[in-house]
Image (cartoon, rainbow, N blue to C red; front, side, top):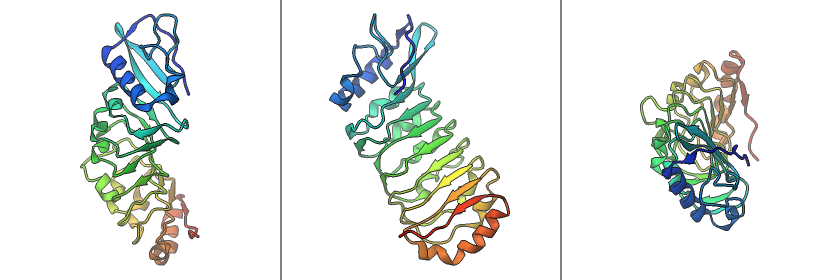
Amino acid sequence: MKTANFSSSSSSRMVVKSLNEIKASLGWRVVYAWVGDDPCGDGGLPPWSGVICTTQGDYRVVTELEVYAVSIVGLFPTAVTNLLDLTRLDLHNNKLTGPLPPQIGHLKHLKTLWNKLQDVIPPEIGELKQLTHLDVGNNRLVGTIRELIRVEGCFPALRNLYLNSNYLTGGIPAQLANLTNLEILYLSYDKMAGIIPASIAHIPKLTYLAAITFSFSALLGRIQSMKMILFGKAIGISSMQNH
């Protein structure tokens, strides 16, 4: 995990309060690396591991939080959504449970989100106008892609979208073509059925699509024609059958 450089500025009260709430909720697995009351460094103590701070005026704020692969358990810490200056949030490869809270939409500067979650993805995540990388693959997410992108004008900056290896159902909606900055799209190993809409081929920057599904037979009849459409635009498509 990353560590910030020490700064003589003091951390904002919201940063201190929120990170200490997160520390309490995550338990002993982070306590050993999160020493002191100030997550950005306090006196002679270094910043907390995985916490990146920057100075804004007279205060320090948290811009990156990376606490991954340490087997932390429990619910997603809602206090994270109070860190309004976050640009990167990485909690993947842990054992967090429960849904992503709708307050995630408050993180207007967030560019990268990589989490281990379950339940549904709140549509409020589409309000993150600067989000370029969304990786919620290999989770226990349910619902449909249509529900995720139902907010008009959602994900205007999104380039990489990983929804693979979840329990998503329904089909691949044609509205995905509205994500015009999308470059990489992983939808493999979910429980979706139906056809791959031809409109996906018209996403101007799309370079790779992985669309293997558990209901592969439902896609099989259209996969060859879809490959021709996509290859005509030099888009790679993964179409191997799931065993």
